[in-house]
Length: 332
Ligand SMILES: Nc1ncnc2c1ncn2[C@@H]1O[C@H](COP(=O)(O)OP(=O)(O)O)[C@@H](O)[C@H]1O
Ligand code: SF4
Ligand SMILES: [Mg+2]
Image (tube, rainbow, N blue to C red; front, side, top):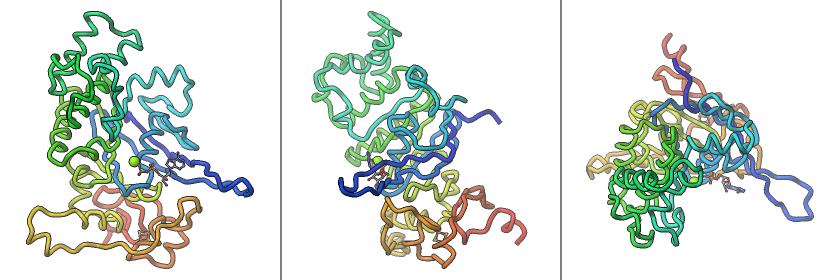
């Protein structure tokens, strides 16, 4: 097997939080707390979980927009957490990020052609006619056409602006694009157009995506493999079809049970798992399973012993005491 494009090992990002100037206690939000996964070239890894579970922090840590507290991130064999500023500048040529809001992602005072060409110009890679040609090519790739290059961001719709942001992310021909909720701010009618564009661009250009979304139907549309996060932890990792056909972790089961079905009859017959119980404070160290305060199946040991992320018979990796390991399932 060839080395993965991206390999994240036991990554932690803890944010220090103020507790008032009289308090001597140092508190941390454990936004990402021991996450590991790998991503191959040209693949899409979906990252899903409720708001606040650490998805954006993880995406930002991959590009070192936030500094990891512990763990390693290997990109093309190089440890992103260990390189100096120059090394990071060099690596960032190959990793780009797309954010949720296409309105704040583009400078309103810059014609869009200049914004798209900026990464190439700033790095001194292209200028003059060659730069103009590349910008025209990028605009065409995202379905807008070169004639738009002199217009300003406010002249475009939300969906068109996200196309412009994608064009700019493609300028340096990256191997990886981290997409953080790239369609969440768009009208539902536009979402699938942008998702289909991302898929088509990947087929043509071969880059990998880490695709972050709180919306499982979006994740299902775009991912090859899915990582399910809960409170800074990975609770399940599986191939897309395996995950949706047979979710194993009680949290993944609850998330999937909440996806609305297009057929009203099937929707009525469906059993939705409603989660009760409190979310633990993100600044308190967890004991046991991170999901135990809301899990409908929690047992006594779940409160004390943290389940390891283990491979199961379906090929999925699951962190739950109640899901038997692959060897036990095979023997049964
Ligand atoms: N700069 C920050 N300082 C302190 N806490 C933060 C900061 N950014 C995010 N958090 C906290 O970290 C946790 C994870 O946030 P985030 O990564 O934005 O999650 P998601 O993208 O899944 O909604 C949340 O509890 C959030 O409040
Ligand atoms: S380990 Fe226990 S609390 Fe955690 S998901 Fe499994 S059954 Fe629920
Ligand atoms: Mg986020």
